[in-house]
Length: 45
Figure 1 (tube, one colour):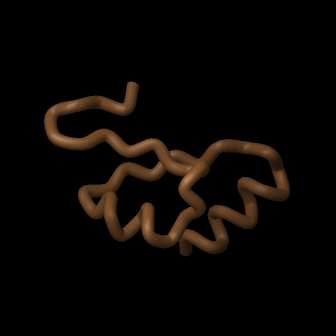
Figure 2 (figure 1 turned 90 degrees about the vertical axis):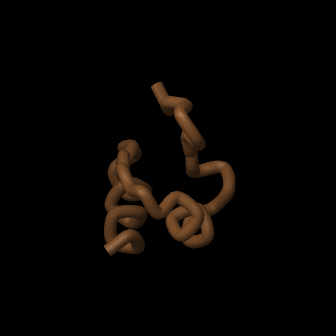
């Protein structure tokens, strides 16, 4: 599913926002420059 979302985002020049409690798993699958992860009590926005 993540590969399909990444392909769509690349083809259409859009951002895809994913909320998950499994941040380390997600960052292991995506390029380092393509993630923004909040940790602890911090917020992304």
